[in-house]
Image (tube, rainbow, N blue to C red; front, top):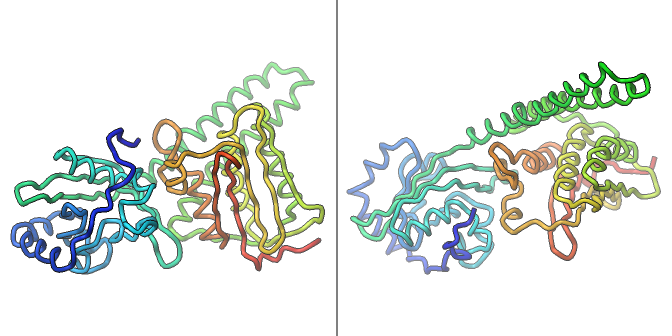
Length: 382
């Protein structure tokens, strides 16, 4: 949550020039360099302008850069945050920066002269695609040496990854298994007329349990770079019909409608059907959960140019949600261990289906997620 005292963003403080930061570095190095290098976790000393004055060896190793080259940078620039250059003021001055845990820790520590601990999710630029980084950060005033801040970083990505997997097995799978058990209990005393419907429900729940386990296994493999997609021809009309069948019951139970829109001409595409089903299934599930009773969720296929699927609902996402929507551990739900849905959408689409995923969300037009597959996906009339 955003602190009530947190400004919209950092003030666009003027950076000190290279010579001034270098002077600060020379003043602090004899006092703190050896001490900071003894610490196993990355630690920085920041000046009032939020620039790095001193970085320990662990931080330099994290970025695979010499510590001296980091002096004068702000945290987002050093970590290659995808948002650090969205505004002329740079790191800390964008509208989304107010939702960054690192920004909150630094500004509140400077404002109150007290230590501050926050969790921070950063998407880092990388040669192929942005990579997520989950951190626990602390900012502590270093008033004895001047107006500086000691900024410590703990990588908790593995902790968040385990929490996601625990959610699958302890929450989703357990819920489905409990529903399956209740269905089997009903089966015992069901009439012949009801038995067929109960049998179909039990079969659906068993499939759901298996799919949740497979999805968790495959996402773990995807993050390790070990998932091998299996591309084949997919009949789009049949594919969307099966999605409608799978989710229409869920939609009707919650008083919502699931609408499929497909062009008149039947087409096929060349992709991995299982991964594509998980991508669109997560977007459909999220969209239905965000919609109000009586509203419709629309899934649309467009074959012009590169094939694309869009999932639209009438709700609008808050700015805080939009800023972190594709990050592993971010969730709008209560509790811990969530955040797997849109994160898996991004990693499966962009790393394995070789497509892109984007969204728009406004009060006027609602929220639309769009999954675009490569233009060479061989979509054609059947």
